Image (cartoon, rainbow over all chains, first blue to last red; front, side):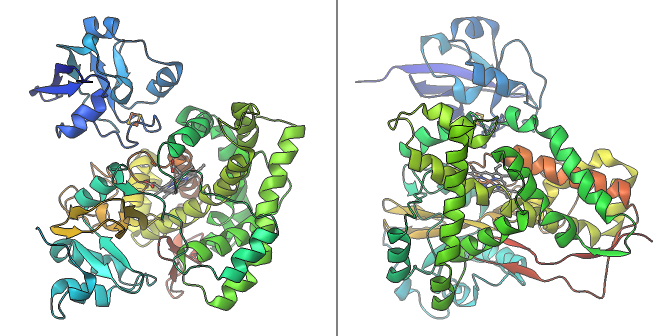
Length: 111
Length: 421
Ligand code: HEM
Ligand code: FES
């Protein structure tokens, strides 16, 4: 099956914007790693042990995307940068139509 | 590079050959100086003594750890010196059914097992042990008070992490030194360079250690509590498709090593480096808010797990050389954490370093250490309580500290200090 391509943008803490393309089903963290996006450390490679893949979604995308699991909400309690209403762990956000055109903001630090 | 490299074909006189000849995998003296040279000139080289390729640059180490599709963890805890068939037979005959369940497994098995473990070994749950760990640290520090000199390994770093592991496992009333002795034996058999006699005489103890883990699980079946084995039993829910009972026992057996051996060595390494720099110690005494970053710098500079292993599932290129499937890699976490590309003056210990935490002490990728939060917590609390109780603590200078190690672990066997000015 040809997987659908999803385009979205990373916004770094220093204001840099980078548009990226990923395949449906990939995680936002994986796309960041594949594109060498800085600031998403993701030490645990997506196994929800580190909390160093924290991002902020724009409000529209946050509302459209699948809600975070209970485990993710627990992990968000321990992230280092300020937790906001649209905080997510990028390793838990799978690309789907909801992510198309999203703006994913990277916090100043993951530690 | 197109052609694949055959170790035997690396010419004498080539820096790569020289590195392989010089590298002493079980010798920790002068290790960091050598690694700095390798990082610069020979980022990957063949070590004939162990039949591994040593990888020293951060970028290369991370790329391997994150690429679990091409690099398998199956060798991670494999005996460096293969166990004699007689020992294997003895163990098999006596019900030693320990199997690789996590750190030496690949997906999909690894993912299945890790998802059960995650329910207990997660940052939030581990944080909930904060008050109990604090109490433990305080009781060890209290027992040292009034003495003139103590060996900090003996008085604190050796036992405390085992006691913390017991909290997680719900173990009470057992001498931590029994577990420590069993653990050291296992470490030596997996990552060390034991003689055949040492291997053969280890059978009984290994079996006792395994039976202890199995008994623990059996007890929790009768009397479940709020602990790791009970959690795993509930998570398994009697379903072998989810997690078999033998996998569960193997997980408990594994944690009885992973949860303390590493932390004992790392905490002693870190305290040693701080005491080698009295100004740093004084800075932490004066301003305890520096402690968390000092802990990270300690993990970066002198952690206990100095290297970790992988094996290639397909042909690959790394550090400018092409190598075939089946190549075994010794990834130097110690070297990667000092790589100048990310850590300026990486060989300098700086408790105020801004990016100290970007180290690889706990690995990277899907096998990332699940105990990192409680390891950090313990080292932080040891420093908090020690600086508070003994602001003038100093190394006993005339008593040199010996760093003992196996292929993958490193820590001082003793750490004599003077507690008061
Ligand atoms: C300073 C102390 C510690 C250090 C330096 C350390 C280091 C490591 C490293 C390097 C790995 C392998 C990572 C990889 O393969 O990529 C690992 C895995 C692991 N560690 Fe730790 N560790 C420490 C303490 C602990 C503690 C206290 C626990 C438990 C409470 C623990 C539990 C584990 C487990 C369960 C794994 C296996 C994860 C997996 O394979 O999925 N560790 N650790
Ligand atoms: S990568 Fe570790 S929690 Fe997302």
